Length: 77
Image 1: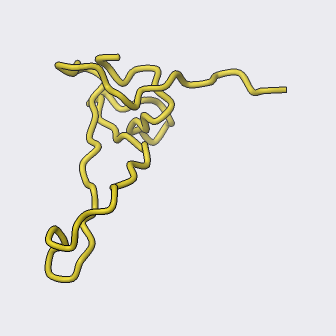
Image 2: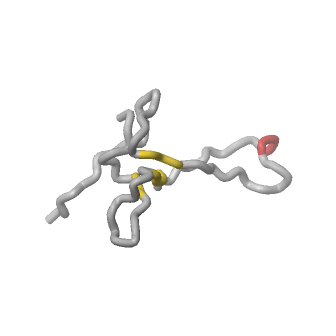
């Protein structure tokens, strides 16, 4: 999908009343697992940490998101 609308990993900002914020901002909560890197890629003794994940429901991606998954609205019995 080229948009995060309807994705189960989308965590949208909400107003104090609990509605979606008009800015359309949010973050992706997909837990990306970094593959093991060679020792040369560790930075001064620290492990590299993936960062980012900013999304906006008003903007579309140039490419499809590989982590997009439909949100389940109905609980499983």
